[in-house]
Amino acid sequence: MYRLLLKTIPLCLVLMLSACKQQIKEKVVSYYENDQPAKVHHIDRHDQVIWEVEYYEDGAVKMEGGMKNGKREGEWKAYFQDGKVQSEGIFRNGLRTGKATVYHPNGNLYMEGFYKEGHHCGKWTYYDEQGYVVKNVDYGE
Image 1: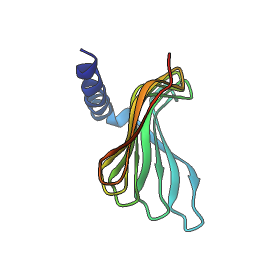
Image 2 (image 1 turned 30 degrees about the vertical axis):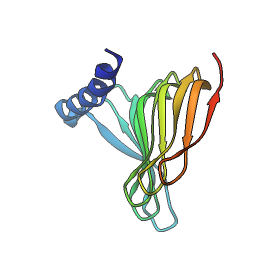
Image 3 (image 1 turned 120 degrees about the vertical axis):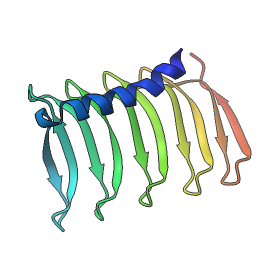
Image 4 (image 1 turned 45 degrees about the vertical axis):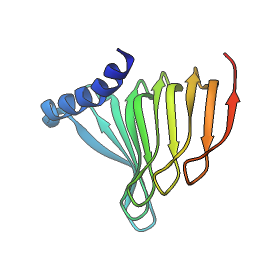
């Protein structure tokens, strides 16, 4: 059930954004010296930031995810400059929660585990660049 929910959240966000496209505004919050946007907020008709995108200086997406009441909410993804996923995780009220995964630049898993209210919890597994487990850490509850 939890996995289905995680897969459904991004789809709902995309549908919501596309259905209300006329009502969503983009606001560039900061720029690089080369005039490329560094951070962009997507704002709903109630002037609430609902999505945030950070960019690399060359315009590639660096990180993106949902916002609620000025805090990170829902799924967030970070990307390497070449567009490959660097990390994925869930936020609730601005704090990491649930499963988190981080990848090496070659696409292999670097580490995976869980967060609870912004802190590591339970068992985390760390991998080398070839995908072999290098250590397991139990952070407890």
